[in-house]
Amino acid sequence: MNADCTDGAHRARKRFGQNFLHDSQIIARIVDAIAPQADDQMVEIGPGQAALTAPLLLRLKQLKVIEIDRDLVARLRQRPPPGGSLEIIEADALSVDFAALAPAGALRVVGNLPYNISTPILFHLLDSLQQIQDMHFMLQREVVERMGASEGSKTYGRLSVMLQARCSVQPLFLVPPTAFVPAPKVESAIVRLTPLATQPAPALIQRLGELTKAGFGRRRKTLSNALQGVAEPDQLQRAGIDPKLRAEAVSVVQWLALANAGPSSP
Ligand code: SAM
Image (cartoon, rainbow, N blue to C red; front, side):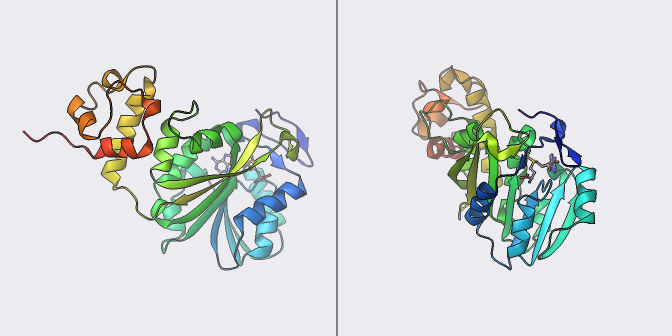
């Protein structure tokens, strides 16, 4: 969805999913949706050329940013935007321990995410949810639709279940391709993720991962077929799920009930 092109002195790199925001109205709308407060502990993934970083720093005392592209890191170091203090972490966001960025919790995570690795980044962040207050991301519209989808919809899938089991997913607004340089081929959307107050235990999440992988991996099959070797028929029954259903018809609450339905007692 990206195309290499020259943008000022920096050549946008397709392999890093670089589409830079340049529409000041959209940028202001995103920052308003984030609603930064001076003392927030915020981290931005992929600051790029500081389209969001600069207005965020004007409102924050401090901001951490994680950028993989060493040329963009050098530019940020040479010309940091004015405002609060900026800590630049040159790293792949997938290898960053987000929990360690805010050991006391209440981390706010934001970013116009590189589309090519947006789903792995979301799953990586789910591992640090205890420390996270909220997350605001720009993603492909289609990904945001999948994140927020309900059972029965054709965009409902494993991503919907794994996210909604742990976060409230709030799609906010669409962003057209013209807001970026280079312009992507698809529409984007802003989404807010807020961790639920009560989180399922890690073992339950692991089980949910196994079940949804099998269920949605063979989504045309009925659950009794798709989950063979992964869940027993009596577990489906105890979770109140009709084994003739397909994965896409099972709600997040039902998937969690199935993950909870341990093996039958002997
Ligand atoms: N925030 C800027 C904006 O809105 O214009 C840039 C957004 S651009 C879509 C994605 C940014 O993420 C780029 O700066 C890119 O270099 C950076 N990036 C790509 N992969 C990354 C990774 N694995 N870890 C950290 N940053 C990454």
